[in-house]
Length: 116
Image (cartoon, rainbow, N blue to C red; front, side):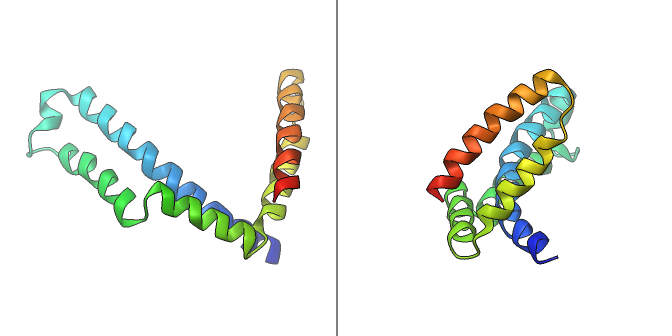
């Protein structure tokens, strides 16, 4: 339970940062699909395009999210839980190509682990 709480501490800013950046792209694609109808104010799309830009400002810029991740690594020692969770996910791979990629990721994670 304590490990999950620590993992949540580092995953929250990582996911907030990723989702805020990804939402901009998805909203722009949604507007493009609807063409001109997605651009006029009678549809919901203009709000959907504006909101992701606001979210990245309101929830914290990418720099703020990175600082929060670093704070979780240093103050809460969340790196150990995070890397352990990644290793557990990689251990369950059955496909030979996925196993090869998992081996590469483990090597990368071990270099990160040494520096944390």
